[in-house]
Image (cartoon, rainbow, N blue to C red; front, side, top):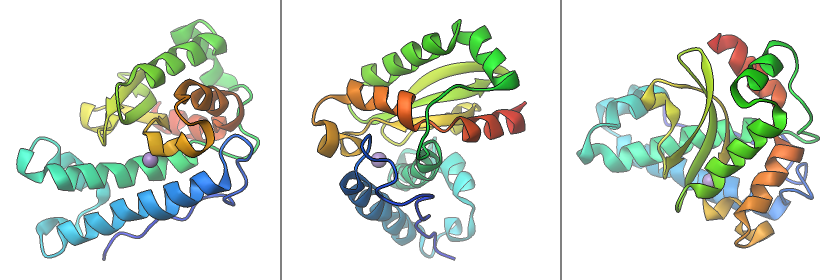
Length: 200
Ligand code: MN
């Protein structure tokens, strides 16, 4: 079964004014779709054709010859995860045990935002910023291109796409402004809490 483009979990205009329908139209319907289509072509007729996405990522990560497969599989997974990392009317504050862990790891919510924004803005070139669970501890990491925390044995809780295609139409070169809007108005704490509870 070829992979399918996962539909967006909300309307394309639902994240406005922080992320426009135009951005989601290009980002989901063109960029994300191209990763899915390219991956399907690359794995057709190979043992990967019957594998789960996570298996493909894991088994192609260390192999230079499988680099193109890894890049496309990683980007399919990362985008599926990114759409869920946001919600209309997002932002706000974490609750319960998750809130306690955020305070423990980063001092407070502002400390989390500062460190996440730093990771997102200092990722040189294309990549991703992540909140992860690493050996039962929260941490913030950044990855280049299609790399994700799975291959480092970390459990992803949330991500922000910092490829230029994620923000150029709305913010031009101002990546920091997009990341701030992500943290204040889009981040989906319910999704983070559900990943946190599964990881714990
Ligand atoms: Mn992207």
